[in-house]
Length: 319
Image 1 (cartoon, rainbow, N blue to C red):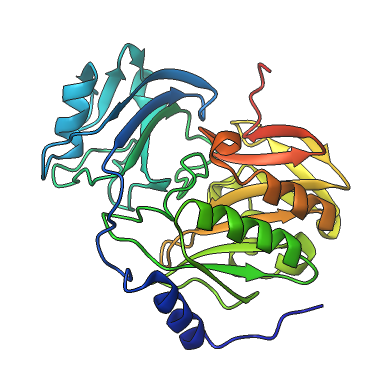
Image 2: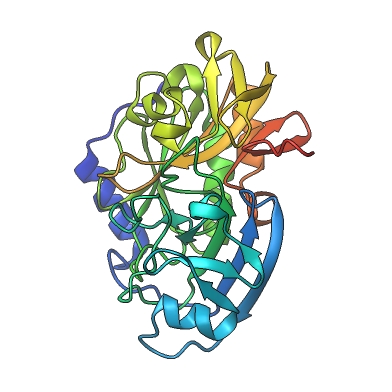
């Protein structure tokens, strides 16, 4: 069945009640900050550390210099290397970073698309900071990644926690229920709302639906136009019956059919990032929902699921 459309103000009120006043307030809880450094879209680890004590008001640049061996790049405020992993000539591949799964904001990249480290970017308690060295040829900007789950739902963005909503499509209530249960185990209050309501600037949304139901939505259109628009190296074809997976150059290297699912995140640079838990059919959505765990998603930009097989996206051509 299809869900009745619920007015956004009603949804926000429900979220506010569930959050018990958390709203856009600093998140309390674990103060442990994790730093992960990888390369090739998370395919290979470089270094990592987890710290329980970060000095108050410490900048990201200062924290990186303290915990890792960093060298400057050949342009202002970029990294040439982190713990021995080196950017290429002209910054390709280059370094990019995500805080709680969210990329640096537009304007925080130089004219060669490398991420710069603004001196006023602060480290907040509970942040998960992820640096990755990759070639941006197919996607200038990757606005959000799923590999820091359950962030950004637990500690939010910039030290502020946002209400979380589940947008549920037709006939996927069991998948929505499973995702809601996972989020609540992680301490995240969540409210259901109708598909198509949208996340807006004050909420984080997880959209759960078959691709057929997502086709024509804003996030769906971004993904359909490829990684340069969405940052997601996958797209659905044949009316949603097939899922194409791409390599880091944006070339289709694998096509999945019935039962295929996808967990990805994107945004339109206006609203907060939107997570997509979708698939070619109901079985694919359920498989994607089952993959929504920290262990399964760790260090993946996006994840496709084909039966019992998890496939990190973009697809590593060497594997």
